[in-house]
Image (cartoon, rainbow, N blue to C red; front, side):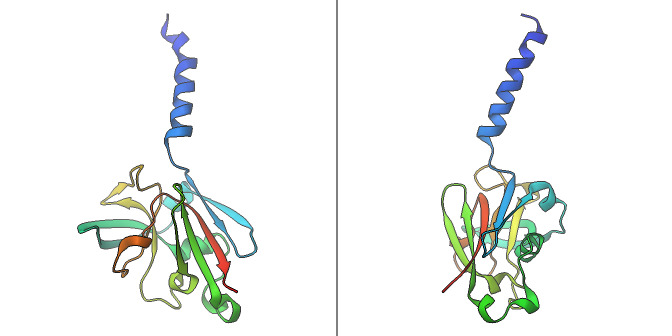
Length: 162
């Protein structure tokens, strides 16, 4: 068989590896009314990044990513001066590819309220996150335990507590 005949087989194999073997390269952000916005890995990579030095399971790590407030702003989630009254009951539910979920008060992600900066990391120690962590991971410095440092984030959902 000539090399040219292998091209269709290689194309199908590559497609399957990409489709089945890699996590989603987009992040869905859903507002309190249920409207969804998709933010791509390219948009996140091109956004201004911050660096967080942290302990991750007793090992030093340097995470790079975009502040959650910037991600939420890209999706049109109101923060800052609009965070008052009923908006103070809103939460951010982060969902992972494996079904794991964690919750933050939305005000925790707003620099107008919080001192710390929670980030959506896409790099660890200068390298893109591996398949067990990425493509996105929430890093919340200041949490005594990293239980809310959710890996393989696929969705950020805003919900109001009644």
